[in-house]
Every structure is written in C-alpha cells, then in structure tokens.
Amino acid sequence: MKTSAFVTAVILAGSASAHTIFQKLYVNGVDQGELTGIRAPDYDGPITDVTSNDIICNGGINPYHQPVSTAVINVPAGATVTAEWHHTLNQVANDPADPIDPSHKGPVISYLAKIPDATQSSVTGLQWFKIYQDGLTASDQSWGVDRLIANKGKVTFNIPSCIASGQYLLRHEIIALHAASSYPGAQFYMECAQINITGGSGSKSPATVTFPGAYHGTDPGVKINIYQTLSNYTVPGRYSLGVGHAPPYGPNRE
Ligand SMILES: *[C@@H]1O[C@H](CO)[C@@H](O)[C@H](O)[C@H]1NC(C)=O
Ligand SMILES: *[C@@H]1O[C@H](CO)[C@@H](O)[C@H](O)[C@H]1NC(C)=O
Image 1 (cartoon, rainbow, N blue to C red):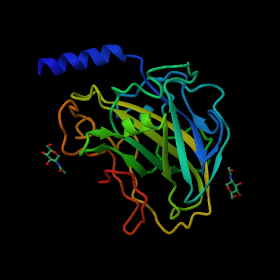
Image 2: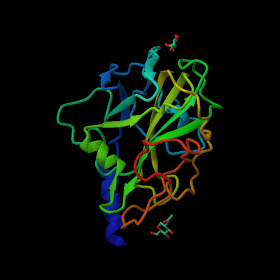
Image 3: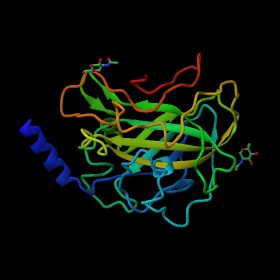
C-alpha cells in the first residue's frame, strides 16, 4: 500500500503537465487538416468536474484556440474515421509524453449528438449517444490509452450507417485514471469535431445521455484504483445504439 501510494505520487509529480488534445480527424483515411472542424483549446489540461459544462466539449476553463474552425467535415454514414491526439497543439520533437504520458491509463470513448448547426457555439442540452469505447482488456491489463499510444495517437472507429443524416458534434474522449482512486481525480480529456453525416439510413434512434449528467463521481469507471489487477472495467456512459444495431463496437462494450 505504501509502495503504491509512493509510486502514484511519483507518477503524478512526473506527469503534472503531460496532457493531451484531440486535434485532427481523418475520414476514410483522408486527413482533414490540423484543427479543421475541431473545437480545441490551446491548453491541454483535463476537466475533472463531471458536473461542469466543460465536460461537454471543453472550451471553458481551457478556452478554445482562436479562431475556432468554422469548417464542417462531411462524413458519409458508415465511414471509418480516425481521431488523432497529441500532447500539445505545437508538437515538439521526441516528446516522451506524446501523444499522452503512458501513466495516463484509461478508456477512449466517442459520442455523437445531433445539432442544428455544427458550428453553433451553444452545446448545452444535446442528446449524446456512444458509438465507440475501448476500455480495459483484462487478459493483459491493457487500456484503450495503451493502444492509442501504440498507434501514435490515432484512434479509428466507425460512424454508424443506421443514424439520420445531418449535422452532428463528435465528442471524442480519453479518461485518464492514474489518480482516480478518489473523486475528483479522474482526468477527462475531450474535444468536439463538427461533422455533417451524409447518406444515413435514419433507421435507428439510439438511446441517449446528456452532458453533464452521463457521468458521476461515484461511477465504478470514474472512481477506481487502477494500481491492482482488475477483472473488469465498466466504461462510463451508457452504450446503446438500439436493439439490433450491427457492429462494429469497440472492445469492452457494456
Ligand atoms: C451536409 O451534406 C448535405 C448533403 O451532401 C449538404 O446538402 C449540406 O449542404 C451539408 N451541410 C454542411 C453544413 O456541410
Ligand atoms: C468487476 O470486478 C469486481 C472485482 O474485481 C467484482 O466485484 C465485480 O463483480 C465485477 N463486475 C462485473 C460486472 O463483472
């Protein structure tokens, strides 16, 4: 116990500023450009209050880089998208904490919310549904963040083909759990991409959650000591695209 508390303290001290930002999107492998269509702050620090409006799309205590992109990225329903994370907006060579410090283990999650205008500033009151999650692989105790680092900051997932066409925000998130044994402690990193889904069948209306609201300080996936062998991990936030929705799902679906 003393050892693990010491290790935790050292990790915290060593990685105080080792944060991260989702800053680029690829659609079917095509690079859409740095910060194009993404609301990203200049500062790479986390949100820790799950009740704050900052948990929606960031941009409050970490103000957005100006000007915020007015681009809306066209994404065919069913497309493969790739989100790319880096430690900071201005990347430096040979940064050991790029794309994120390896101590920052935890899940990687994506949500969509329909929105009248993907460039509108207000993001409160939206209905979000989860389309991807990569939590813990219990067999080797590896996390979504480990796989993100192995992929040099890139996370690839699919946009469902069964949802309605139109403008959406894509909320892509990492929850770093290295200091999550008490709440607040878990570190929430998220940015929202402005997208326009085309050709969706609209055959499914997924169950939704709100932000804030989806997460609680008492959730088993938010308040957790990861410095032990875990038999399972429950990724926060409901994961439902409705009965009968086809894969792909990320690993560790609920
Ligand atoms: C979204 O895509 C539709 C279909 O291609 C198009 O008519 C519309 O102008 C697009 N909207 C935006 C904001 O790009
Ligand atoms: C998850 O693991 C904990 C202990 O490791 C156990 O108490 C709990 O029942 C498990 N939950 C599920 C859903 O398997």
